[in-house]
View 1: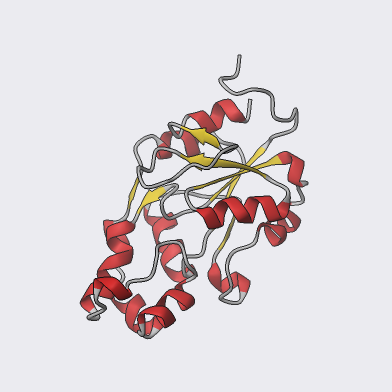
View 2: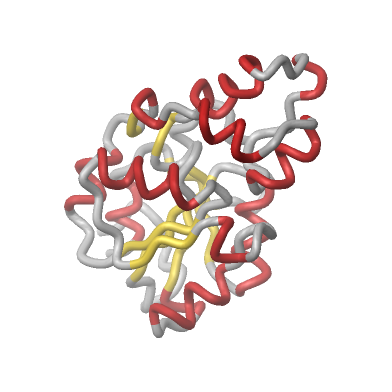
Length: 190
């Protein structure tokens, strides 16, 4: 018996945000801004596309990427075990492709598809292109994320949103499906 009420009989594919959902990357994301002299009051909120974050902070994307250290990024506890049990999953992230792919390779994760800010022309991520590329309908998918933008991204695509409640900075809103642990994704998919 699933720990979740039956949302739909068809949830088969999990899409994930990367930063703050699969990986704890807050320190890695903030370090380049500090090194580049961005004062705390000018550090942009986490979760923005890199280009937008760098414009807000007044730094060049290449300078930021030169300082970004993907080796300090770690999977949240339980994420690796959960991903290894999924047959089909994908990543949709506002992260720059170069650093996102480096992290996926280092963690030895192989999603069937990974799309990053670069794939959306530097604009915020969108699930529509992912659904098309995967050949799935919105009713088949759950998008797991940790931010208000992730929630809106799922709603815009007509996809079930699940909050990565294992991230202590993720804030739920009324009506959110909150997952307490990564393993809850497996129960959600049946």
